[in-house]
Length: 229
Image (cartoon, rainbow, N blue to C red; front, side, top):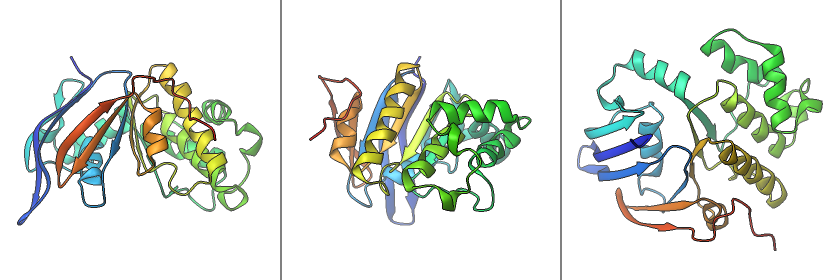
């Protein structure tokens, strides 16, 4: 059974079909990139997969559970327990340190644990920046805090929406390398990106156009590493 399966999923706003009968499968441990022009339905799809919205039609099976039929309360629980979210905008609390920002995510899941939060920062190479505020961190470091925050509750799937959109080339490579390590550890990754180089690092790329799945391509030479110029 696939970890994630969309069956004829549509999201309709009046006359607008933000998603139009999209069907796809993502296997456990797979690394998938999603591309497409603005308005193609990428963000809508991510919001539905991430339990932040519901489809108008169709089924969304996450680990065998049709989340399209779940209540808002249950969706919050599923998102908390199974999904790690990473955004282009970092959404860090400005008056909390990097360590405390990671611990906030623990609070919503169980009990904040400073040792576990520090271990998460160590995984992303930021143990020495744990006591710094977001304003004292570079953009790349802030995004790595976001990765640590997404990992703290050991999610089954990581959803990343333009995670390198605000980063320079050097920090983009660092974040992609973190994704590669997560993939090697068995984490399922779905990454929305406008950057062809980031998409090429994934095992498979899905391309959306006008709310439909236009085509997909397999990266035959998949290594998880970016090709450096």
